[in-house]
Structure formats: structure tokens, C-alpha cells
Image (cartoon, rainbow, N blue to C red; front, top):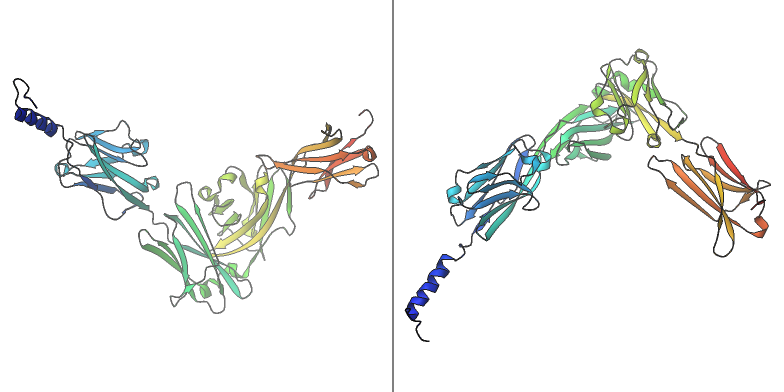
Length: 455
């Protein structure tokens, strides 16, 4: 190769080497985070840290903490200055950098007032020029809730039922029972729900024999914090409670209520007793959330199910005689079903079951004629606004039942049923017919007649 005029081969090679040297990518580095999840309690502060390996300054690097993707930023640092343009709204004002060791590539993010939504995976990302390194870590948020409350139902024969309840736990806790010797007892049932605030309410029941049960304990355990709370109950002592010898009674027959009317739920102590110092609770399947809670002379709004808010009121408060009536306004199809009325004092309760049947009679049937592809015709009978599911029937002019060719049933967003039944017309069946729709609970029927004359 001939030398370029004015340049030597060795000089040219030296220039190329110099250019490669100054454009060389930075040395690779790793981003290291904690080996184990970070645990933080609700309401406390959490510190998430990461660092470069090998050590190097991160003063001129772009550093980002993010959640699911780089654009979902918790906080970013550019040239040593916080950049909040792409910061997630829920972290504004709640996070800051801890930069004491930024010259050695160590950075930490502090999250103030940890919330349940902070629970989960985080990514720590360093960028130096075109080179990017990152690592992930897990923040486990935990809530230590209330100590358990133990409620005992008055004896039913030779057994008693215990119900353990607690609120404010996260994540879902473990619940278990122990006898006086510390031996675990088999739980009859367990129920957990997550409230609007994200915290869990737990309810666990246990049945024990009344004659040989002493002290029983309920434990609520948080696996993340490895902490628990417990309470105990002395069954012989509770059996001396005045409620243990009383009963709660309600209507013996189902309560029929039309959609839009008011429901009246009445329950009484038997024999009569002064219940002014007792808690009265109407519930569906579980103690919490409730349909309505009356305690210390007032309604406890914080324990009420969302669908009953603003719809309940006590219309009879003869508590000095052990009688009380709850009114539920504007009955809906979702109100249909079983209710329980509980009187409770000092951890002992008695209850009665009430059965509410919501009913609605729909529109008068409408009969239309529909032509079929094969030249035959069929009658189509429709009606809407029924609850529960109605009975549909075709009858001939002598009242005999005619077999429908098909039936269809749909339910509106309000829970009311729309029905459709079809009857195939043949030469022998082209006579006067009626379509009947009836409510099975009310025994009310609406019908329409069809005559072939003029058809």
C-alpha cells in the first residue's frame, strides 16, 4: 500500500486508533438491588436502593425508578437533578432521592406514607450514553389490622357457634382457632372480603360442644410481617350472659314485597327483654358489611353495604320491649333472599332468619304473527318487567295447554325478566288461542288473546 502524500501508514493507523478510542462505548456495568423483598407497613416510609457494580460515579447518568414500563415513572434523575415531567400522579409529593453515595453509583428512593397501591414490582434503571442497565425489586406492603373480636351465638342444643372477626389486614391473613391446650381446632367456615380501601375483613366460624368447651382463642396472622394478634373467649362465662337464655323471632312466612315498595323487617326478643344496651344488626350472609347496624342509639354508617346506603331507617324502636323494625326503601330485585337479624350484648348474640321475596308483575302480553321460511307461521308472545321468573303458557279456546315451539328469557340490568314464547300455527291449530304470563308467588296472571279472523 502506497503512502498517502503527507501521511505515513503508521500515522494513519494511529489516527484511526485515536478515533476508536474516543468513540468507544462505556464499560459495561450491572445494576444491583436488594436480594430480598422490601417490607413496609401501610402509612410508614419505604426506602428502595440500588447500586452500580463495579463502582463508578452516576453523577452524569440518567437514573429512573419506574413500575410496569419506563414511561410509568416513579421518579427520574438527570444530571443530578430530579425530572418530574413523566412522573406518575400518585407519587407526586411522596417520593425523593437519597443521593449520599451518587459518586460511587449508589442511589436510593424514599417513598413516604406507603399505600396499598405501592405494593409490587419496581425497576431501577441507569443509562450512560447508549448503554442501559437495570434491575427489579419487590416492595411488599403489609397492614396489621385490628385484634380479633369473638362473638358467640347462644347455645343451640349441645353446641355453640363462635364467629371471629377482624378488619384492616393486608394481604389476606391466616385465621385459626386454638383450644386452651394450644391445639388447633377445625374451622367451620371462613370468609374474607377486600374493602374499598383495599384492606381485608376476615370472618371465621367454629362450632364447639357447650358442655366441655372452656377457653377458645382466635388468631389472625400476617405472613409478610410474621406477626399476629389473638383474642380468647371463656365459653362457660359467656353462657351466663342474659342473651344466652333468650331467642330472636321474626316472621314465620316469607315477606312478599313488590318492586319499588318498602320492605319491613321486624324482629323481637323472646321472652320480652330490654334491648336498649344491645347492638342490633341486620345482615345478609355475613356479619360485615351489614344491611343496617344500630348501636348506642344510632346507625353505624361505616359498616353498611354500599347498596343499602341511604335506603334504610328504623321505623319502630321499641327496644325497651325487645322489638325493632327496619325499613328498606324502594325494593329492588337484588334485595330478594335471606336476611338475618342479630341482637348482641357483651360478645353473645342471638339471631333469626327472615326470608324476603321480591315480586313484580310485568306488562300485558303482546302477540304478533311471524312468517317462517317454509311458508308456515308462528305466534310470538312477549312481555317484560317480571320477577321472579314467570310461568308462560299457551291455551286453546277450551283452556287446554298448547305446547310452545320455543321459549326465551332475558334479564335487564335491574334484574327484571323479559319473556318470549312462540307457538307454531298449523291447519288444525288456527283457532282462538291465549298467551298467559303469571307470577308464581303472587298468583297474578296477565293474558292476551289471538283470533285467526282477519289474519
